Length: 298
Length: 260
Image 1 (cartoon, rainbow over the protein chains, first blue to last red):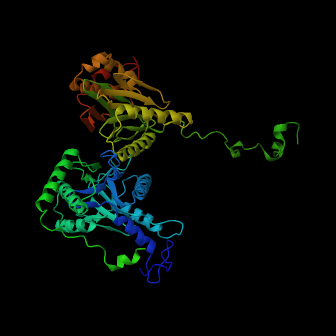
Image 2 (image 1 turned 60 degrees about the vertical axis):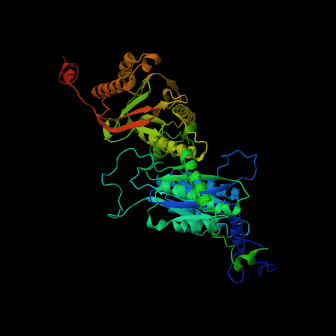
Image 3 (image 1 turned 90 degrees about the vertical axis):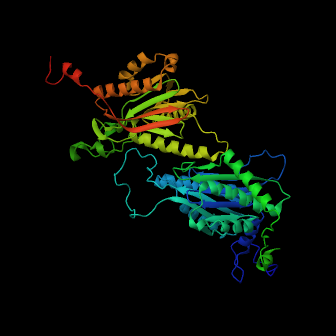
């Protein structure tokens, strides 16, 4: 609480004497109250999942989607302020379309994360704006094969485009998480929102870095993690929303799509079963942020 | 100064010579979009019981020069339709990119609804009409093949003027003169087309491609052919004309050395 009354948290873009930007830290607080979002980077695709908290029984089930398509091969989900998430998506779509216009080829996941990281960071720099109250997870599949340029009519040189290193693999799954500060990293598994601590603990158990988890198993794990992360917060109703992106030979043919109903329901069934199974086991309690977090609260 | 107003204020011809009009600015409209440059020739298509067969050769001509020989003029749209392009190739590329962005924006929606061939044809015809109304036409005639909202075969044409029409068989360019009569003997009306099998339709289209290669000097023996049904698109882009017979050429008289 040392910041109270010092005035360093009253406007955006101002450092405190000990080098903190309080408005950005408050934005992170907004994220921590949002429904849990996760992303898993599997060996043959990416899964995005969100715990959509139902705020009213009068809302139509399945409507008001929280995961959005950025480009054919890319999707994004966010935790925090929903309108900020919508604006993030609309900007990301513009970036993806402008990339296509300039380069005549789809934007890679890392390039989109870079563009959006830069965009969010700009909202920490001026007193006329506030930072984004979201942490976004972007998942995509960069084509593993030589793609034709958009609008290409002929076959081009038979050796393909230059600049390739012999024996190196190109393309594949991409998963990035972008925070209100504009910070972004690539992840094997990413989690944000209210249940992030539990979700992260579960993600770590999957040993994603080994690159062995298949997309089909990833969908089941994602459903399970959302259910486990929700468990601490049982009083509120929620819907599980999931999308996936596979490689060109996989079930979505490189496109970002909703997980089909039958697969989603099966994953939910397994998740519920797993939850009942270890109900007696004590879950790792989500530790609230340590003392430094408390300092920021007004 | 003389008595002719058009001479006033200008250097005197008898002193400086005639005025070089090439220095005058051309204040007319830009004309570089008023004719096609690199062009593709015929597209032919025929409906059958479950779908549509469509074909176009792989040539892009620069005037009478066979300039590009691996140009794919059949473009797919979201597993729902095939668009066959006749006319200017750069305008085709523009439209292809336009359709790519349309497909991307269509995927933003969460209802899972995708545009069918009928919707796509309407869209393209409006694009053509807007551009011709701006005196900046997209120099193409396109055939849109696919299935409509009731999963029935759909085939229609749209062109650079925004004109649209539909028939059980359609052809653009030279094909409208040479292929259409052949296809009409096979499928004079919708009922006849609905009685055709896929094999019959493919056979007829291949025959038309052969006739077009025999008689159209802007055509080639390599072509693309696609079969569109409600189950998806089967597109082959490197087909070669088979069983050609040029025996008829011997009998042609009236050209070159064979004057009688």
